[in-house]
Image (tube, rainbow, N blue to C red):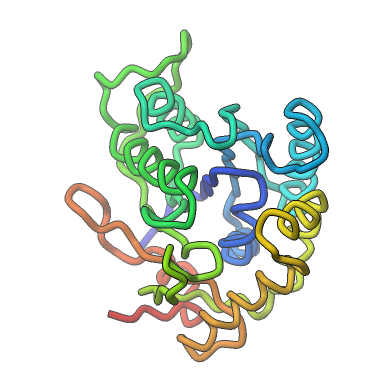
Length: 258
């Protein structure tokens, strides 16, 4: 398959979501010549027990920029507030507009079911945006809107945080990417979000958040026979492209299980 579009768009609810769940795969795609774009729907402004909204937003912005810089990725911040990401008309248009701006071959985002609603709503927003981006009569909020995309991009949902559902049960995936060669890079990207160590320890009881990331990658690696892996499910519903483009690009380091 000839690939003419080399743009990859990973969209997370908050700063550090992408680093936790799919930055290894993004690094592997970057090494193969693809352009990487990262979208963050919310500011991360509730991610502190110490600093206020504005200061936390600035801290999280700087951390996100530092992490994206390691990957050479363009960063789009959509400006919603934590715990206030809604599936409403304005936010649907905003996410669609960003997908049109990037016009990606592949989009990565949260699964529809995760431990918090910001992630789940972001998943729905991105699914809507991918579907709507090529529709000429779907007008976005901008006074100077980006042109529609020619087609719906490939859409992949990365695994839920910690690889578990809301009941704490492990959630196997259908597609696994071997990230063993880039696990240290993934950890380096995540380490740029230094403010989240204290937050996760106080809110989630989770210290050593990099080790937590590696633990999840080991779980998914075990499922596919790799040391470390990231897991994905592909959206193959009506109108969406069906082929596993990740497998076509990355080859044997991708394992698909029915």
